[in-house]
Length: 434
Ligand SMILES: *[C@@H]1O[C@H](CO)[C@@H](O)[C@H](O)[C@H]1NC(C)=O
Ligand SMILES: *[C@@H]1O[C@H](CO)[C@@H](O)[C@H](O)[C@H]1NC(C)=O
Ligand SMILES: *[C@@H]1O[C@H](CO)[C@@H](O)[C@H](O)[C@H]1NC(C)=O
Ligand SMILES: *[C@@H]1O[C@H](CO)[C@@H](O)[C@H](O)[C@H]1NC(C)=O
Ligand SMILES: *[C@@H]1O[C@H](CO)[C@@H](O)[C@H](O)[C@H]1NC(C)=O
Ligand SMILES: *[C@@H]1O[C@H](CO)[C@@H](O)[C@H](O)[C@H]1NC(C)=O
Image (cartoon, rainbow, N blue to C red):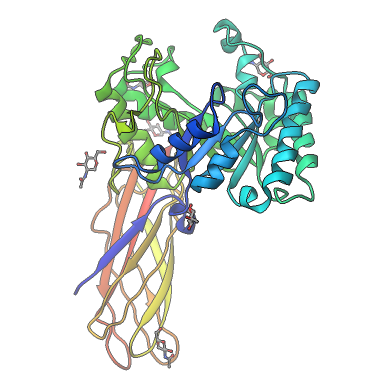
């Protein structure tokens, strides 16, 4: 029996369409520098699909309210955009952001709108007014009430335009989102942008060895208050050089470890993310993943790369599916779920295809919640018409309850006419400890 399993993590059909990119500052940038960076990001060795740009402002550097040149550069390089409006200033300054947004809509039309992934109102504004932000002398922030007001102004500005269906959200740090004084901001967002750097978590054990744990712990804390809204990772990274930060020591090797643990987990789970940063040679700390267009370390993610936890308890999983087939082919879909006491898993999708002796094939996708460490599994499929095919089996592999679990279901199937030698459904389960 031959079988081949194609598996994707992180939410079935959306997984392969997830957005990946870098953050791009506005200062001293021109059309040419944006184009150059977007092209570099899109062709990085090992990570050639970083084709999205997160911006912090709508305004071109050196102007009052002219749309940022990154937009024309994005159109010319087919780069998607997470737009940003700087929100830590007064209404008069925010009006300039709104003017630039509206000009961009009228100037560039659908070629612009087609690239917009979302619109972020503000960046770490609530962090900067929190005790931690104030202690770090992080600059002017913004109150939750004003952010909610600004979010409403952006919704009004895009209403009835080509951007009317673009999600509007906010970007901030995890501790901001779990602070109930800011819940009004969450409820006014379509998505939550999360900036999360274990390097800066100086009151935690922020060794490189604990970095992926800290990252996903923060992600899950935000997920717990997000009310089901998508959480996009808008900034993360580990410096290749710079000062030690509690237990975190910058180095190229550790930056690679962090990339493999976090970026690859996000990629394999199909979560939108914008890494910090494509290049920043000379900065301290320096988070850049490349220099002169060349990666500083291995950016390739294989299908099993990424953080996995070893704290799994127990779980079981089951899958059921339906299939219809005629003498030459079969298609099917399946769903799987798993639960465990204090572990959550989300995403998880498996697509399995199998060629049977008759040339029949079956494919399915599965989503799972919960964790899977080990457990018996069954999969069944029944065909339409007068044919029946069933497959039962046990999980052959399952690893990690808070990382990635892979379960393969194999079995024999028979059919009234013709023959289908087998059916395989694969399910990968990504799970995270709460
Ligand atoms: C632009 O990129 C998208 C994927 O992000 C792709 O589907 C599309 O074909 C590209 N368009 C052009 C003109 O290259
Ligand atoms: C919680 O949020 C409010 C409003 O943003 C802020 O004033 C307060 O300092 C925050 N508290 C903590 C502990 O971060
Ligand atoms: C990881 O960090 C958390 C939070 O600081 C801490 O409780 C835990 O002990 C750390 N784990 C390791 C293995 O250092
Ligand atoms: C996948 O990448 C990880 C590092 O993220 C590595 O440890 C593992 O060996 C790789 N697996 C394969 C099959 O190459
Ligand atoms: C959650 O899982 C951890 C690790 O397995 C365990 O120590 C803890 O007791 C569990 N908590 C609950 C409420 O089950
Ligand atoms: C049998 O399946 C093939 C492939 O899906 C399809 O093209 C064909 O129309 C089907 N025939 C019948 C009788 O359903």
